[in-house]
Image 1: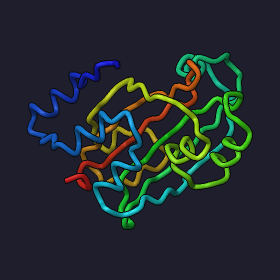
Image 2: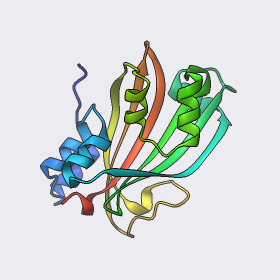
Image 3: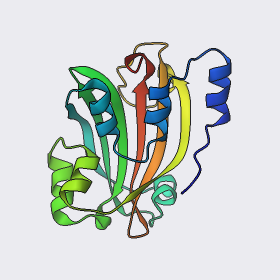
Length: 181
């Protein structure tokens, strides 16, 4: 199992006074379903709202990130995870289309279903490999609309879901620290 280390940025933010609570460490380092962690934390179901989804062609950066050829089709998806009508996370996923089973792809692109629940539904054996963990401010997040409060501390992480030795998805998640108190 790959050892997860907090980035220097996380360590610096902690030194500056950000109080990294146990729930923060859990949400940042879990190699399981974040949806399940949020549901356990809130004791309420998580609802997904797809903010944006489109098929794009992999440029040099995305092809390197997903270990695919440039020009391959990639599903770009941004979702919001709510529990009890409170925003708990924004997740951006990049998925090579040709690595998806047709039914899985259809559900991913048509329904507001969490990735973990899709993996479970289709009995896909996969593992998550965390690439990085960071603490940033809401104004540093490069999403079209992030809807976080200005100046809010955001916990973020990026990981790959690996299936059959290949990257099935690359996911970046953003968690407003204020709801995880």
